Length: 158
Image 1 (tube, helix red, strand yellow):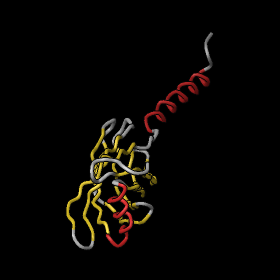
Image 2 (spheres, one colour; image 1 turned 180 degrees about the vertical axis):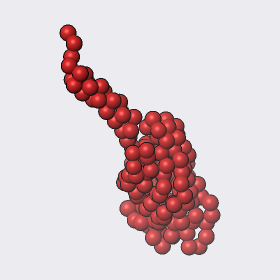
Image 3 (cartoon, rainbow, N blue to C red; image 1 turned 45 degrees about the vertical axis):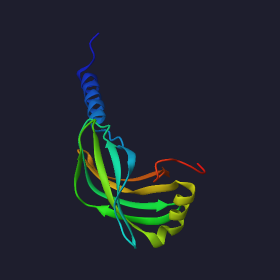
Image 4 (cartoon, rainbow, N blue to C red; image 1 turned 60 degrees about the vertical axis):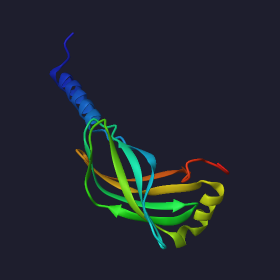
């Protein structure tokens, strides 16, 4: 049995649209926190770098145009910033990213004492990422929280 030309064209159009939507479907990149490196210490605070691995699960490259971030330590604001430099995330690959951060001792004094006493502290990094993709620009919030042991061993409460 032969389908009418109109029905055949609809099937072909539906198949093309389904294939095209699969190619441009946007999946959120996965961010894994690797750690913090202390770059310098002074009487007012510390300059640190947060190291992240960002995996692009999409079948196309993504360009990160802007990244905002805010860090908290033991629930207290510790610092933040904006990165406006473009970072390219290749398809199906992991890209290492570092975020510079200046910590203010006055803002995190109590957390510093907790780190000394408990040997670890709770932290969170959150903000918004602006992605440029083949299907447009997206603004996506992100948040990562965990526990950091600056002295190499975890102790105290969890």
